[in-house]
Length: 129
Image 1 (cartoon, one colour):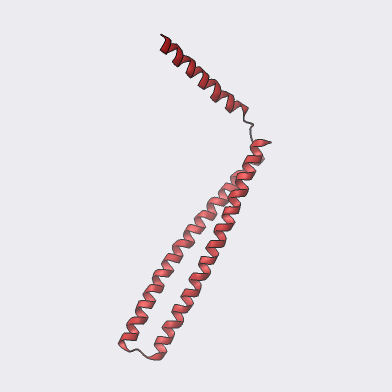
Image 2: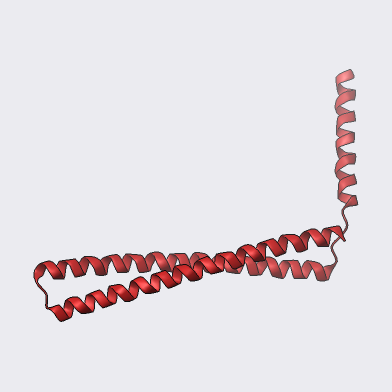
Protein backbone atom coordinates (compact mmCIF):
# COMPACT_ATOMS: atom_id res chain seq x y z
CA UNK A 1 0.00 0.00 0.00
CA UNK A 2 2.75 2.44 0.99
CA UNK A 3 4.67 1.50 -2.12
CA UNK A 4 1.67 2.19 -4.40
CA UNK A 5 1.06 5.58 -2.76
CA UNK A 6 4.74 6.42 -3.14
CA UNK A 7 4.74 5.46 -6.84
CA UNK A 8 1.60 7.52 -7.51
CA UNK A 9 3.08 10.51 -5.69
CA UNK A 10 6.34 10.18 -7.63
CA UNK A 11 4.41 10.00 -10.90
CA UNK A 12 2.32 13.07 -10.04
CA UNK A 13 5.41 15.08 -9.06
CA UNK A 14 7.23 14.12 -12.26
CA UNK A 15 4.21 15.06 -14.40
CA UNK A 16 3.87 18.43 -12.65
CA UNK A 17 7.58 19.07 -13.22
CA UNK A 18 7.38 18.21 -16.92
CA UNK A 19 4.28 20.29 -17.57
CA UNK A 20 5.60 23.16 -15.47
CA UNK A 21 8.86 23.37 -17.38
CA UNK A 22 7.05 23.05 -20.72
CA UNK A 23 4.64 25.85 -19.91
CA UNK A 24 7.43 28.04 -18.49
CA UNK A 25 9.23 28.07 -21.83
CA UNK A 26 8.34 31.04 -23.94
CA UNK A 27 7.20 30.40 -27.47
CA UNK A 28 9.51 31.67 -30.21
CA UNK A 29 7.60 33.89 -32.61
CA UNK A 30 7.22 32.71 -36.19
CA UNK A 31 9.69 35.19 -37.74
CA UNK A 32 12.46 34.19 -35.38
CA UNK A 33 11.60 30.55 -35.99
CA UNK A 34 11.85 31.11 -39.77
CA UNK A 35 15.23 32.77 -39.40
CA UNK A 36 16.49 29.95 -37.22
CA UNK A 37 15.20 27.37 -39.69
CA UNK A 38 16.92 29.19 -42.57
CA UNK A 39 20.18 29.28 -40.59
CA UNK A 40 19.87 25.58 -39.82
CA UNK A 41 19.32 24.75 -43.50
CA UNK A 42 22.31 26.86 -44.46
CA UNK A 43 24.52 25.01 -42.00
CA UNK A 44 23.29 21.66 -43.35
CA UNK A 45 23.99 22.74 -46.93
CA UNK A 46 27.49 23.85 -45.92
CA UNK A 47 28.05 20.47 -44.27
CA UNK A 48 27.01 18.66 -47.45
CA UNK A 49 29.32 20.86 -49.52
CA UNK A 50 32.25 20.14 -47.22
CA UNK A 51 31.62 16.40 -47.44
CA UNK A 52 31.40 16.61 -51.22
CA UNK A 53 34.64 18.60 -51.40
CA UNK A 54 36.41 16.05 -49.19
CA UNK A 55 35.19 13.26 -51.46
CA UNK A 56 36.51 15.13 -54.49
CA UNK A 57 39.88 15.61 -52.79
CA UNK A 58 40.09 11.88 -52.06
CA UNK A 59 39.37 11.12 -55.73
CA UNK A 60 42.01 13.64 -56.83
CA UNK A 61 44.53 12.05 -54.49
CA UNK A 62 43.84 8.66 -56.04
CA UNK A 63 44.32 10.07 -59.53
CA UNK A 64 47.56 11.77 -58.47
CA UNK A 65 48.87 8.49 -56.99
CA UNK A 66 48.08 6.82 -60.32
CA UNK A 67 49.96 9.55 -62.17
CA UNK A 68 52.98 9.11 -59.90
CA UNK A 69 52.85 5.35 -60.43
CA UNK A 70 52.68 5.90 -64.19
CA UNK A 71 55.59 8.37 -64.07
CA UNK A 72 57.76 5.88 -62.19
CA UNK A 73 56.89 3.15 -64.66
CA UNK A 74 57.72 5.42 -67.60
CA UNK A 75 61.02 6.33 -65.99
CA UNK A 76 61.88 2.65 -65.49
CA UNK A 77 61.00 1.86 -69.10
CA UNK A 78 63.19 4.70 -70.35
CA UNK A 79 60.60 7.10 -71.71
CA UNK A 80 61.63 10.26 -73.50
CA UNK A 81 62.60 13.32 -71.43
CA UNK A 82 59.72 15.30 -72.90
CA UNK A 83 57.21 12.68 -71.77
CA UNK A 84 58.74 12.54 -68.28
CA UNK A 85 58.66 16.35 -68.07
CA UNK A 86 54.99 16.39 -69.05
CA UNK A 87 54.22 13.78 -66.38
CA UNK A 88 56.06 15.80 -63.72
CA UNK A 89 54.21 18.99 -64.70
CA UNK A 90 50.89 17.16 -64.49
CA UNK A 91 51.76 15.80 -61.03
CA UNK A 92 52.90 19.26 -59.88
CA UNK A 93 49.65 20.84 -61.10
CA UNK A 94 47.56 18.15 -59.40
CA UNK A 95 49.47 18.67 -56.15
CA UNK A 96 48.81 22.41 -56.27
CA UNK A 97 45.11 21.84 -56.97
CA UNK A 98 44.81 19.44 -54.04
CA UNK A 99 46.52 21.88 -51.68
CA UNK A 100 44.25 24.68 -52.85
CA UNK A 101 41.17 22.49 -52.38
CA UNK A 102 42.28 21.55 -48.86
CA UNK A 103 42.74 25.22 -47.99
CA UNK A 104 39.25 25.95 -49.30
CA UNK A 105 37.79 23.12 -47.22
CA UNK A 106 39.54 24.38 -44.08
CA UNK A 107 38.15 27.85 -44.74
CA UNK A 108 34.66 26.41 -45.29
CA UNK A 109 34.91 24.46 -42.04
CA UNK A 110 35.96 27.59 -40.18
CA UNK A 111 33.03 29.51 -41.67
CA UNK A 112 30.61 26.70 -40.84
CA UNK A 113 31.87 26.64 -37.26
CA UNK A 114 31.17 30.37 -36.98
CA UNK A 115 27.70 29.89 -38.50
CA UNK A 116 26.96 27.16 -35.95
CA UNK A 117 28.13 29.42 -33.13
CA UNK A 118 25.89 32.23 -34.39
CA UNK A 119 22.94 29.85 -34.80
CA UNK A 120 23.27 28.59 -31.23
CA UNK A 121 23.59 32.13 -29.91
CA UNK A 122 20.50 33.28 -31.85
CA UNK A 123 18.53 30.29 -30.60
CA UNK A 124 19.48 31.06 -27.01
CA UNK A 125 18.53 34.71 -27.47
CA UNK A 126 15.18 33.76 -29.03
CA UNK A 127 14.37 31.52 -26.10
CA UNK A 128 15.49 34.10 -23.57
CA UNK A 129 13.47 37.05 -24.92
